Image 1: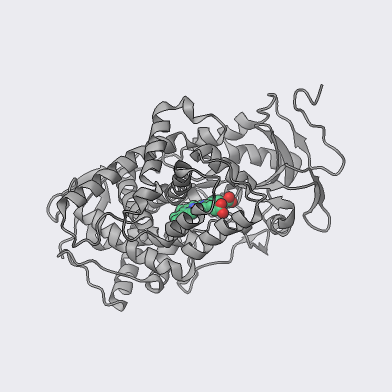
Image 2: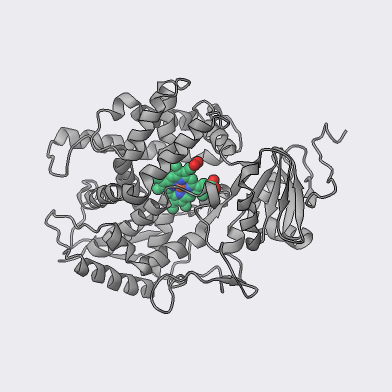
Length: 496
Ligand code: HEM
């Protein structure tokens, strides 16, 4: 009987178990409604490690940040890509890449590290700098000048500027340079981006449903949005573009050796990268700009920092079509902006770090605690429990722009719980082997956006005392949460 209704009995040595009240779904609805509250209640009841049945899976939550290292140390017992490949196949519609084919998975993983980190960041950063300024200053639909205020939704603004600049940085352009004055090419480029933004929004809206296992055919317009996005990314179309990033060109090369993928499926591996590069970055940019505009201390400190770095780099802002450039090292010398971005992400991140057990094994937490884990079970960390823990972060729901600044004005890295220094206090990018490979680029591009709006625009929220819009909890588990509604702001070019 227990097997038929999918209920598991806790065996000796296993963590405390909650099957939930509903067959198959288990605790999924309660967890989905408010994961943080759900986990805090179970932590109080069961202790720091417990198991919940969620949508047919048994998930072992490890909630004490001092135990996270122990989870990382058991890497050889986990298949950390099985879940990712299966989720990616479900959401983007390519066939499932076999995670047991270690050569393929290693190649894919290595390609991310090779093309998104270290020296590979330099061309990404310089292309992004150019693309951001092109999008902000030359977009013909919004006539920014130094006399008239333009009013727009802040999320809409961050979305369109970052999406366009990020898309062009990864997938290249149909024209060669901003000096390329071929109007037809510029227009075609603009039409492609505007379509891509609308399609991305439509597809991203149902992303949580796809991850939960609903078939995309239920959502007709999202399905065609996804297919249209992918069509632009067919290899034959990408080959017509200039200045494609190393990330995408290497992936095109790897795809060519995967005979199991047809042309559209190859395009969908690029769509997965488009999603990974945008879905978190867009809301993270919104929250960073929102808090910057709402907090005069943050604005003052960051304006001073931007001026210092520009002067040191001998860059002058002018609106005569010449762009400013800051390289990786100059951007790395901005601890105030780093702190603002970190604090904005601490408040808005709700990712779930997941690992799947390859075999039955014993998870040793510390000298006193060890738990039996069964093959195919999931071990999960939910960093929001750390990010919003008042014993780690005082007044955790409030934005403090200098929370990650030390007294010496440099990055602060000492955070404590019960008098012990924490290694894991900030994890919006995941942890261990599954950590986001694009995290450095992500922070750089948000920092570039903040720098440029400070340089070029006078900006203010229409309602200066507006409260933060609530986080859209329907995406909890997937990363940085979006605001449930937009916030109006106005901007005009600074008179230089
Ligand atoms: C994976 C966060 C931006 C590329 C991930 C994961 C997280 C994450 C939490 C999954 C880690 C896990 O499963 O435990 C973020 C956040 C971003 C961001 C918060 C922005 C604020 C980017 C950007 C890129 C990128 C800009 C690329 C240009 C990737 C890729 C993966 C990934 C390729 C999959 C890695 C794999 O499966 O091996 N990201 N990310 N991300 N991210 Fe990011």
